[in-house]
Amino acid sequence: MAREVTYAWLPVGLLMSQKFDSMSKMAKVAMPVLVVHGAADRFVPSRFSQQLYDAAISPKTLLLVEGGSHNNSMRTGAAQYRKALGQLFGLRIYGAEDLGAAVANGSGD
Image 1 (cartoon, rainbow, N blue to C red):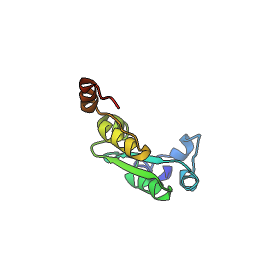
Image 2: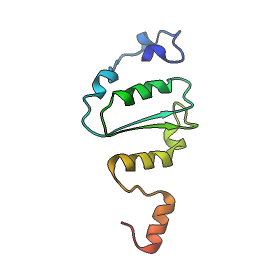
Image 3: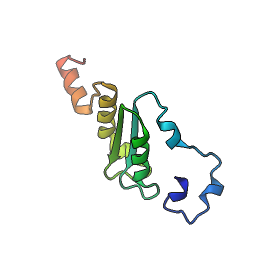
């Protein structure tokens, strides 16, 4: 995958000291998987995340963060992250609005 990043004309293979064969390992992951990618990432194509997602066994979630770039997906898609994690692990994840209401009502379950 590293050979197919945006700056493929650079010898990135020479710069990378660690190489990971994620594709061959995904089918062996025996826990929930959340794959997140910024839809506006100009360096790494989102199809790589789609391939990782396809290779994973369930339960799995693919989150493409609209407006998220290579480095800001977590900040840009914070609410999406919380929701995806909650759904993946069967948890109730509070957003700021939910938490404020729960505290006001004394119902923080």
